[in-house]
Amino acid sequence: MDTTDQASASLDSIRMLKLAHALAAAKSRQDVPAALRCLHPDMTLHAPALGSQARGTAANERALAGFFASFPDYEVALEGHALGAGTLVCWGTARLTMTGDRFGVRPTGRRAVLPVTIRFGFRDGLIASEVFCFDLAELCAQSGVSTDTVRATLFGDRRR
Image (cartoon, rainbow, N blue to C red; front, side, top):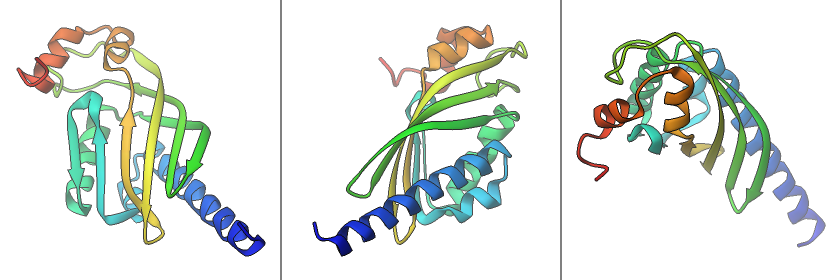
């Protein structure tokens, strides 16, 4: 790789990191419009632990609004990352308190602190995909709710 290619790759890496941190900051403020400004119009958001996937601006707006309704004090700190070929993987810590009835349990008000891993893909200078990974059983344990009930509510028979 010549010096020009290295400089271009370095700028792309900086842009990817800045976008990931801007998205994390917006989500930590529950600022859906600011979060959406970081996202490509065809953005795909996948949260395997919750069994959810959203594609496109409107679906991501609904997904984020629903997530923040369930976890109104959500905040995430990105603590490390790895880069490669248009992909950024970040890891860090999420802090959140389960509320509402979305999960089929009565929330206890306990705040959970969870390790998270987030894989981002990019297109046209924006985030085009996000896979948000955390341990649902650990969230339930720290929140003082039944993992079995939450899984049954989220997945029904799909996880068998």
